[in-house]
Image 1 (cartoon, rainbow, N blue to C red):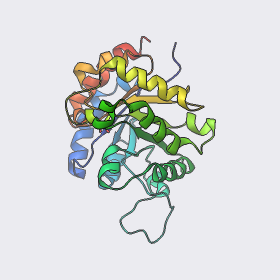
Image 2 (cartoon, helix red, strand yellow; image 1 turned 60 degrees about the horizontal axis):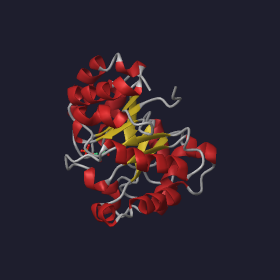
Image 3 (cartoon, protein in one colour; image 1 turned 30 degrees about the vertical axis):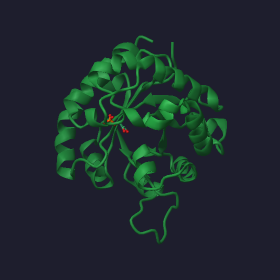
Image 4 (cartoon, rainbow, N blue to C red; image 1 turned 135 degrees about the vertical axis):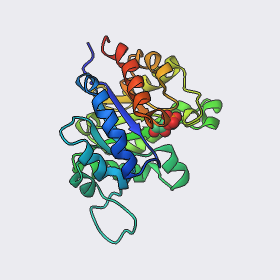
Length: 254
Ligand code: 13P
């Protein structure tokens, strides 16, 4: 029997206003009522939606997630948001090192590591994204790339701290393309991730990249896949819940 509780996080990326957030949660909360007994479920929203999420989710166990943070607690850093600020809003999870932040906003393994420490200090669970690009995938360097990202992000942590982190394996070529990684290949690299640093036996490792209701069962049946980080299929509450149900059919039985 596996000890790791399934986890599904919707990454809304740069979609939805506070008004959209309230409408989403109204529908999602009711439909998710049974699923929250079997899995941790969270919604990672743009900063401007977090307070609307907090209010709309009051009394629910559905978690609140952010999509990034800065590593300093406060200061003259125009445009940034810190871990203590997120904590004050009831944020429980924060994505760090997403490939879109690495590609478009200069995120590096070093800044990811600083953000993870700040989040752990604020009792927020970091969801650390790793994954190879299309070119790396075809060059056969996926394992080396992921190992480098993990070492940079988690190398300075203790085993206990690593056990508190969630790792998301998101092959960049699978994100938003409709072409998910096949389940066995994803499991092979996620098994490698689990063995590559102390403490990750206990940590949750989730898959991201075109996860849909149609492939969630096959992906979640794999021994090293503990759930999903879901982009486009999380934007519609019914589709996201259907995906979670499909995953839980096998995660529950494992
Ligand atoms: P898609 O599910 O849209 O491929 O996005 C995945 C992702 O980037 C989640 O963080």
